[in-house]
Length: 113
Image (cartoon, rainbow, N blue to C red; front, side):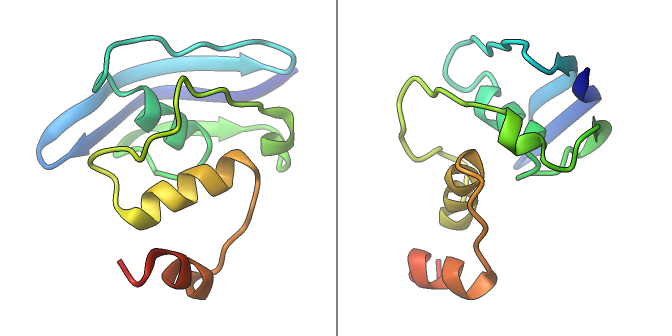
């Protein structure tokens, strides 16, 4: 069963394209590994697949509303990601554990950053 499909997703930060036209299909029960050097766009791609960041162009289709319950993520390390705001870092890690935070909670945790 297809869990999600990304077609032609791109993401740019400060006029620098960090994700360049990725296509990927993820089937339920499948293992997907994102491997690359620092700055290659792995974390940004993951954030888009998890629905934390929208792609600038391209589409991501998810066939299950509860898709996050069927995804496990193992990061090599757990640093804060450069180029992400405090809020984006917080939302990324919250999404990995399927935690929901309202705007007030985010403001409290980030000190209004």
